[in-house]
Length: 167
Image (cartoon, rainbow, N blue to C red; front, side):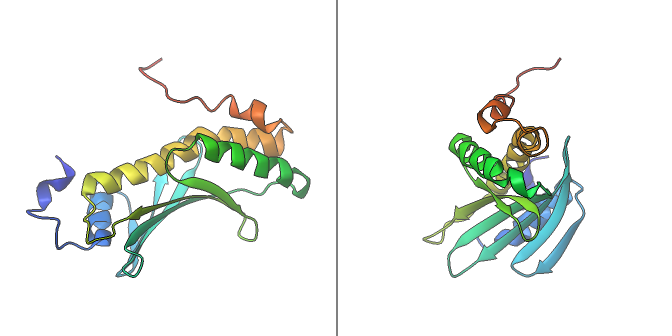
């Protein structure tokens, strides 16, 4: 069933209501934190990713934050930051950052809907999938840099662009 089949029109639907519908569609447990914010977890191959989407009417932006725990040794932080810079050069949408105080790796993306634009369920689903796929793609490189003392450029060679077919 298509994500839009439940809606006659998405024009008057709050973006977080659409996210809630998508979470229900995928059978993800979610927490509607506020009218303008929702959180849920998505199981990946490497980690379980915590995802939060929040709507800012002032900025007219739907912001996605995808996080996973990471506790790199302090002496590996410079290499991790270099790896993040190189990683972000490879990301078309969104960007990674490391929140040291919270010990979280973070992928952020903002969908600007200025001029009363409307996000479709497919757009939002694609945002969520892109966040998880990016985290899955680069997680091994982050681990190699922080725990195996690998050079960031070498570690990123394992972050293949796309896999097609099945093995």
